[in-house]
Image (tube, rainbow, N blue to C red; front, side, top):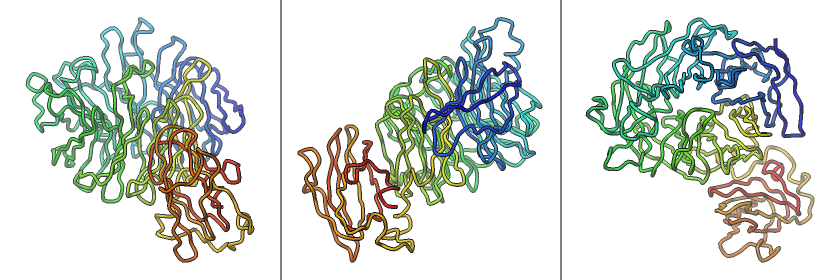
Length: 539
């Protein structure tokens, strides 16, 4: 049995998993894998990364990849309890991988997991063989303790595909519906491919399987010349909504578009829409009331060698759609892309990915306004996110000390979101006396300063008085910044941007709310020269 120890490196810490054996190794213990409100490294001597997190009845299941003693990637799953303590830790290999005699030619990974309805899990991943550069869907059903029950490789029947795999799935009565892609040649070929949906029964047998393209007819690669793939799926009242990417004009227009398809419970297409996203694709979807929130990425695809796959690297997409797929709101941000989204309690979603090669999370409300963001100081990306009792659990991977390590992060909901506008209240007067620590009768200086090029649109409210201030030629309130009194509350709105530039105000009383309305630049807030968080400003 391997041992696990935690070594804290101040607030930004890491966890090292030492000496894990290659196949079927187990780790159990009570050490925290992620302390509250911290980034943590989960380190392997060679390579490790988490690609998904499943919210279970009694905790969380993290899945991804790590290397074995042969320097091959293998599937990896770590079960955490509700307090984020490790219950078990196992690695898995696909059936072809286990039979392979030429070590180093085969690689496995786990993309995501689903509950099996009996306390166990369906682990969904891929088997990649370098000899033919082929990648196939691989599924393993395990017990509640991670013990394998069966393991199988899946391909599209009757099609000689070199890229069959699943990116997402949902648990349904009697089985699972899995969404992915089936492609006839190398992944970069944008002319030939289909979105792929499979209903898999609990025993691992296929009930139905269908391929889709943006024209609405999937006749095989001999007759259609479009590229299509699915990367996210969510249940609807009468079927499933799947999202991904497609080239709706085929060879006439090789750029991909965001793609959404609604199917009934048997996979029959109800409607299909593509979106003018530029050269981009959708990566994930979550249910938001009667509509949906959809994440995406723009730009050319960059090879992720550790994943034996490609990801877009250009910009981030956030969409809000109604039940018919019509755009309610959309936002584009600079960065490397949003890879996953989870719905917020009050509508909207929390989107995760990377920006400037740093893990990044952004919260949008139901109207598409940005409520908050968190940009890590680490070098990496968030690959998935789940809700916790008081916030969010994020997983991913990044570079540290010349290796790639898995990453686990917890964020308090108050650190990422400002829900005051959701409550339709002018302020957050929760019964405390107005004259608290920050209503001491003194005048305070408030500065909003951009940390990078781009725009910052904001609004804050003060129970007291506010006036414009001039700190320097770069930090000062100007004519585009507005102060309006509404009863005993002052509402201030404005915008700034570009590195080192900002706005300044002097106020007496108490700041009751601060909202980042929109804009793609990271920024900081200073009170009396000291940097503070939104929570500290309004507390």
